[in-house]
Length: 119
Picture (cartoon, rainbow, N blue to C red):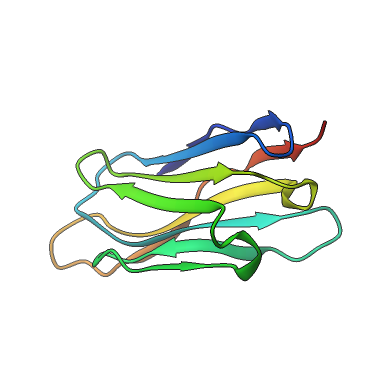
């Protein structure tokens, strides 16, 4: 249902954009977000955007990362500017999806995409 891409190697101070697209039978999409998990650490919330457009960010990425969504394309993006080595992690997209009218939202995870910040 969710396909994430855009990860890779980026230098500190550079930029990278992650993309995540929902596919299949999608009636509507609720809140969407990006999480990350570094080796030996728990998965943490990086950013979320609700249907009304309100956003929420992890304190350490505020001012550097921007989450956005394209409703027409059923996609969500994470623009990563000025990444730091501590941003290195596997990034996962997450979304509440409804596959039909009257059906409840269900939560889905995309496969992870590796982001490595290193010179």
